[in-house]
Image (spheres, rainbow, N blue to C red):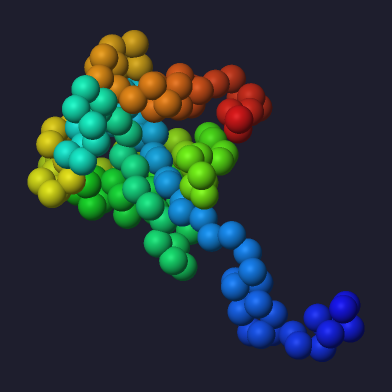
Length: 156
């Protein structure tokens, strides 16, 4: 079997792996903070009533790094530019979904311009003044990504 595998090489190997392995959706979230430590929260149009507030989030596209997904999603949803920092969470989600979250810093972009197809409202919130309708997993991400002592790890 090993001899056969080594003999086929390249794109045929990749095709066989693609056909035989599970496919995953990747949900990427950005915990965006401004210079004062406030967190960017969005009220998402397609999320369930009573749980619409959350962090900028979206699905990774083919050929895109997760860091690029954070930058793209924040830009698409708000018009703002961010600088991606450390990985905060990597884990399995519901069924065949992988969840990835990065800390990010607001890097400019001028005026907040919401994408009305996806976002109903946006605001910067102090970490100790988060809306009640914030998704609990996003509340935990905000808490786990708070500024830390140098050298402390935030990967969970």
